[in-house]
Each structure stands twice: as C-alpha cells, then as structure tokens.
Length: 368
Image (cartoon, rainbow, N blue to C red; front, side, top):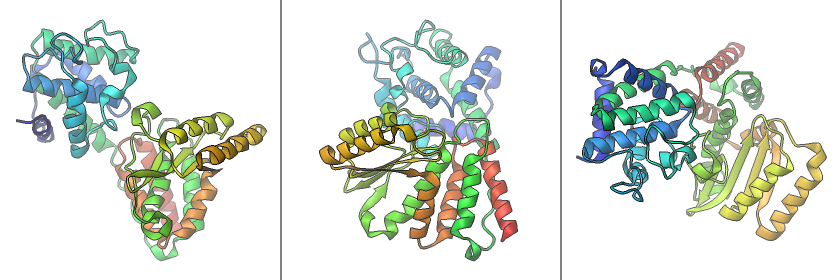
C-alpha cells in the first residue's frame, strides 16, 4: 500500500467517525486537541506529525524520531512528505504547507525528535508534538489511532468555519462603486484576530483569474495557486503574494500590504526578490499608502531596479488599484462570485472574517 493511499484510508475512517479515543490516554487526547487547534496556524507541525505517523504505519521498525538520513538508521521525512503527504493533504482538504512541513525552520534542525528537541516551538505545541511521537516510539501507541482522532478534530474545526455566503440577488445592478465600498469596509474592519491581511490578496487573486483570460497582455499566462498566507518567503519560495507565470517563467508578482505602509525597506526586499526571480513587473500595493519621508529613496530604488534589472516596480494603493482593475473586466458578477467562493472556502480565514463578509453582502442585497 502506498503512503498516499494509507493517508486517504485513515482520513476516510475519520470521516466515518470511527472512534479510537478509548484506546488513547487522557494525556494523549489532550495533546491531540492541542495539535488540532494549532493545525491551521502551525501547518508545519501538523504536516510533519502526519508524515511521521504514516511512515511508521508503513515501516513499523523505523524510529521516526530519526527524521534525517544523516542520522544513523535515519530516513528522509522531508522527501516522503514532499512526494506523498503534502500533495495528499491538499487533495483531501486538510491543512498543508506549500511544499513540505520540513521547510519550517523550527522543524528542520539536525536533531532527532526526542523530548529534548531544542527548537523554539510554542510551548504547548512543542510538548504535544514531541510527546505524541514519544508515545508511538517508546510506549508502542498505534499512530493510526492518534491520526484518526486528530483528523476528526480538524474536520470538526473546518465544519465550524463553514459560513454559507448568499449570492447577489440582482447581478445587473452590481456596480464598481458598490463593490469597492463593500471591500473597503471589509478590509478596514477590526477583526481582533490574524489572517485579515489575506482578504485583499484573495480579492486581487480573483481579479487576476479573470484578467488572464480577458487581456491580451496575459495571453498564455497562468496564476499560481495561492499558498499559505503565513509562510515565510524562504518557506514559500515565492516572489510575492500573487504570481503570474508565462511559458513557465515568472511574468509578474504582486505583493500586498493591508496594515503596512510602503517604505524603503519593503522596496529593498522587493529588489532582492526581483534579482532572484526576474519578473518583468513587480507590484507593491498598500491599503495604508507610502511613507512620505522615504518617497525619494523609494523612487531611487525603483529607478535602479528598472535600469539594472529591467523590471518595472509599480507602487499604489490597494483600493485605487482594485477600482482600476474592476473597470477592465467584462463581468462584475463573475469577479464577485469567484471572490465569494474563495472567502467561503478558505481554510486560513477565521469565522469572523466570513461572517463580516456575509453581513456586508446582505447589506448590499438590501440596497439592491
């Protein structure tokens, strides 16, 4: 049986609500609960744990604490994750990293995953992660039982986060100004939680999925699938929040800042990415704006990049750019449907993000 198939079968048992809680100790159930609640924020921990336990099921004699080939009797957890586990997690809809959980700095250290593992992981998560591995290795606990109970909890969290967003009642009356007013209210709302900065990214992603089919500039282009919004640049290996590829080459990159002003340091970071990835255009968009006292320094960097690397850096506001792009697309309702579906189905957004959008759509429907 393949690693992917084993993972899919265990997921199906979780879907069918198979119960193995009576085979687990109270401590183990507590640790499973901790990992489930962190699974969307700390996807690397979740992914690595799943990889280790699936590998253990298929290779019972392997000490899964030895997750690198450089260890005596070790194995490459990252390779199996990249090839089998992360693609399958994406397929079945469970939390996953862009490529591998081992690209998370705290998990790739050259140390075995014993209880003394020294990486700087959040205390409760680290305790749960290492103790569950220890129970499998030193107490002969069945990793399948842990995975099924873990998946059940993650699935429950996903169900709680499902908010059904109603469609626009009369698409013909939908206007650019109405959409912009709604998006402005949505972006500026004080959610008192993380991930709100992903909202404008989803908005631009929705527009670009339309633009590549309607504007001649984007002939033969594709929009790369959105990655995790919490992944670092090193982990995600991306040039920006949104990437447009043409003939397998990066064509444009878009970096979007909801709560950060555009300053010279952001331009310096962009310059490094441009040198590395070589797009023809690089957009930096901020909901707040540009740092006025660094305007000349910012312009100097833009000029230098254009002269030396041929890439045009374009800086602008989030709302003005959205308004301009909405003028370019043929069907406003097409954008609104794509955006609504992405908001509704996104696993990183919190319930509050979806509820606020749902209420704004209701208000819009009442106006129409």
